[in-house]
Image (cartoon, rainbow, N blue to C red; front, side):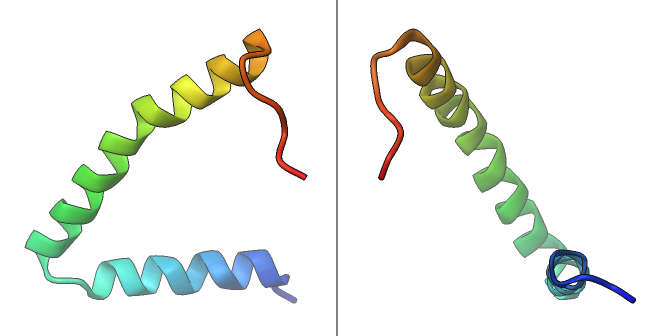
Amino acid sequence: MINDSMSTEIEIRKEIMSLPPNRRGELLNWLIQGMPLLQQVKDDFRSGRCNRWK
């Protein structure tokens, strides 16, 4: 039996693979650009410059 998160991951993968190659490239670029921002948020949280959302 597949759990909900695994089912969601499979569906996301199917949707991504159904995109035309140029759209997959756009998605990849968007994700790559978000990585430095994510790292900055993690660094800020670890250093105490921000707090967990409630």
